[in-house]
Amino acid sequence: MTFSPNLLADLQQMLRYQFMVNAFEAGTIVSVIAGITGYFVVLRRSAFTAHAFSEIGFAGAAGAVLLNVAPIAGLLLGSTLGGLAIAALGRRAANRDTQIGIVLAFSLGLGLLFISLYRGYATEAYSILFGEILGVSAGQVQLTLLAGVLIVCGVGFFYRPLLFASLDEDVAEAKGIPLLLVGTVFMLLVAVAVSFAVQVTGVLLIFSLMVTPAATAQYLSRRPQTAIIISVCIALGATWVGLFVAFYTPYPVSFFITGIAFALYLAVRLAHLGGSPAHLRRRKEMPTVEELTA
Amino acid sequence: MIIGSKTITVGVQGAQLIEADDLAAGYPNKVVWQNANFSFGRGEFIAVIGPNGAGKTTLFRLLLGLQQPLGGTIKIFGESPRRGNPRIGYVPQRHLIDSETNVEALELVRLGLSGKRWGFNPISHTDREAAFDALKAVGAVELAHRPLGVLSGGELQRIFLAEALVSKPDMLLLDEPLSNLDLKRETDMLHLVNGVVRSRGVTALLIAHNINPLLPHLDKVVYVANGKVATGKPSEVLTSETLSMLYGVQVEVLRDPHGNVAIIGIEEHHGGGL
Image (cartoon, rainbow over all chains, first blue to last red; front, side, top):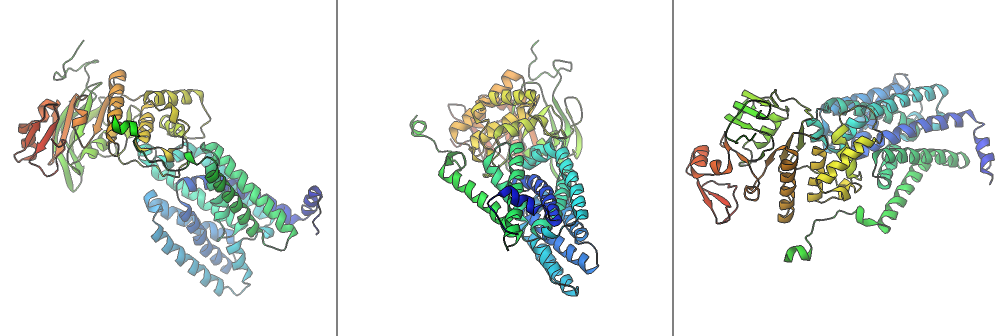
């Protein structure tokens, strides 16, 4: 596989490999769902919670490997149980960093135990922690598609109450929005999205698709719908370019995905610092001289 | 037909918007206040004052249907309070927006109208028009596309008021909208609320710490203290006799030549200093 200046020929060469086609398909679906759910994760400041899901999922996945079950089953079980528990405690509890951190640390330890009990290869642990998108099977792509449809429909249906509850919880509650239901469904959607995103980025790099694109998009648009579309585009771009570059270099895909997402974030932040900072900086309400002397 | 504020007339025009009869509020193991009787009509501007923790917000939670009365009855629009009543606009207390929230103010105002509906919200022309009408009513049209996170306290309060007004409510519940505002913005906000009350015939209940800036606008005062509730015109409630009865100790209400009141004899007084 040699890289040539003809990008189209390179692309054709790459897509002759079934594993690359699978990787592109899975990566595309995961980018869409991570970009969408990520917007609400960032808006609700639940990034740490989302990360906790992936690590609780790690314990589940390692347990699944030990029991000879597909890791995704363990991931889904672990992260959805975590999601239900955190949702049951309410949104304010979802921001309890300390408690979540404690559960997260224990989950990683538990996963480590399962991996060491499993007498197979350490590559299993490695691929759960850092992603194994190049090893995704056609069956896994179909499952990912199913999850993708579920998440897109779920967020579509709950969009307005979820946005309202995320921006203005007290008024949303008074307006009769079932906060517990909306919060629980959201946590479950994030748990499923995280579980599938782990296939691409791994447990430890989950932020690169769940948080970085959405955080970047929030700087680029003040309209939630536009920001969600931008977030999806950034996730897609990072995944596609990451896969392409990794195909022609000996380095891991996950690195390129995180690297591209991070570079975009940095570029946007720097552009905002240098460009028109007035609308992003916190403005203190200072009386003018005229007001003081009036 | 003009109905004096002291006359309670039952009928279409004179129907009371809020009626409380021997109302008690609190939690199963703790009564916050009891024996409250009051009624408010359409288009009245009412201040709710009293010490911290006396149960002012509890009154709002009862009206919003977020909490059930411990005893007595409360009727709002002639029926029991229910959560999500579109006829009530609500601005909660200490309502903060994360400074990194880069969502335009217009979006929040629109959600005040349609946030309860399931499904995606396309840019609906009617929604947008209603949102801009509400923004216009609070003089915040120029803030429509500004991110919520960078708005100042006074600007945010106007957006929250627009969010509450967008569904064209008959009643506004404002929980300490004046806290954290400087004097000028406090006055602006009060004129704004008063304007809404007078022009739209909306009944507004406003929780405040300092009664004095409100006095020129008020129709009634609800004074919550010491487990009891006193209601009436400001001149009836803010007297040495009423407040002494309410607190159960001798309280002195003093007035300065501008009509400002100062309440002497309690640790935490809610009139301004003289």
